[in-house]
Length: 191
Image 1: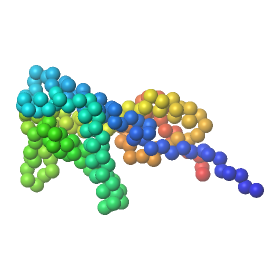
Image 2: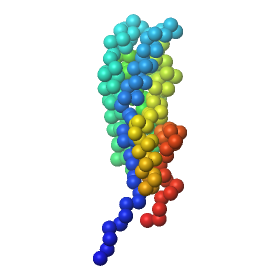
Image 3: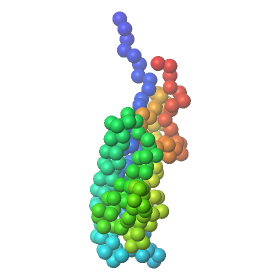
Image 4: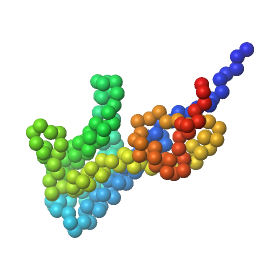
């Protein structure tokens, strides 16, 4: 009679499972919009200012979800075409899609910097500057762990090896590590 193999390793997704996604993205967009609206240095047009003022937190939350779906579709297309994902290309696309989605809502005005490039140049009458948009596009690198993630992984690491199988950025894994928890990849037992 054979016995069932003992469970020794637990594999985790990171985005949405170990780190929060939607709320932190909405929080950062909401906060950045409020700061831009309150800034004396802003040269945004009155039309952009009105649209940004009317944008609710729930709309920023929905915007973050749409933005994530756009980038997720890009990554899926990359897998279909190339059987892999170049995460630097995903970051570039994340910024491009942020430009597009904001422009579609009339919150930024932009133009291609030249006819051979996919790079946009943000006009001064926009809600945010190009450097602010670049910072916002990297919000996905700063997602915080869920409140119970660190403690849960600590408890699981006492009995199992925990490993991530995820498309998470190294910065997110570092955030988990900085929270005094990490995936237990160094103690994977021989299988």
